[in-house]
Length: 62
Image 1 (tube, rainbow, N blue to C red):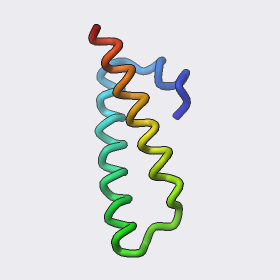
Image 2 (cartoon, rainbow, N blue to C red):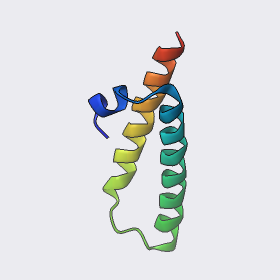
Image 3 (cartoon, helix red, strand yellow):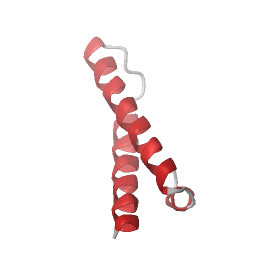
Image 4 (spheres, one colour):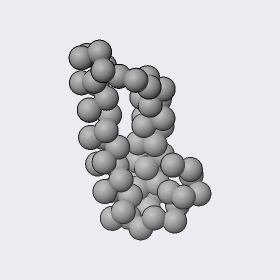
């Protein structure tokens, strides 16, 4: 997701997306271990999205 798209979300939507990205990352790790991973670049993309969401949630709490 783009940064401007994330800023439009409410805090509850941000938290839901954060949990969703964490589950996706968890599933990617299993796919990697089983040899089923087709797009290894997804790791980087998902980790960046998690970091973006965590940053925005922290800024909204302050």
